[in-house]
Amino acid sequence: WDDSIGPCVMAGRRVLVVAHKDSLRALCMHMMGLTAEEAFQLDIPPAIPLVFELDESMSCVKNYPLDDSATSTGGFKVCMFSKKPCDEDLASAFETEFPGSFSFTNPCTLSTAAWCRGATAVCLYIHDECGADIVATFKSMGVKLILLRCRNHDKLDLESCDAAGIKVVSVRDVVADPIGEH
Image 1 (cartoon, rainbow, N blue to C red):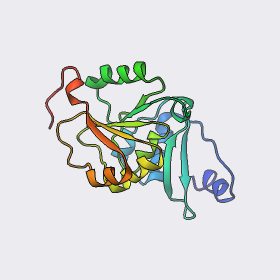
Image 2: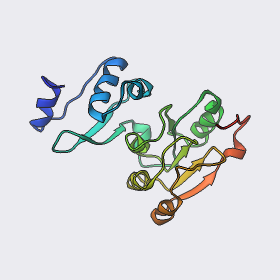
Image 3: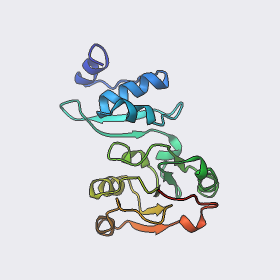
């Protein structure tokens, strides 16, 4: 970063980094200010560029995957955060019914919320963050609907959703074989 990438970015150049997932995780850790554990948990999809927008101080202000299916303008698409093995059927249903839908094992946080770019809806689980700042990010990305696949969600700011015109619905009852929430 300090010797190659940073100076190029500071000079106003766009930089493409192609590397192994672990190297990309280390770079994300540096750019996003993540702990080693948080970086290890990142779901970095193969062959899909990740875009990082930086401010003047080289701090990451926004990041998102640049995927044709995620950024095209046509059709309803769902972005699922915190995908677990038990969510495979629901994720497959989204992808079948709404081509171009996509999912991440990463939780929704302020650092990952912009990954929903191109989605009409986001699907959240109980530990996903969804405060006013994340709702604002969703709105700026064009999200119109939040789908909850859990009974309770104490990190969801309903007033911000209402003010942003983002509807919130539960899809918990349509999830096959729900597991206990903790």
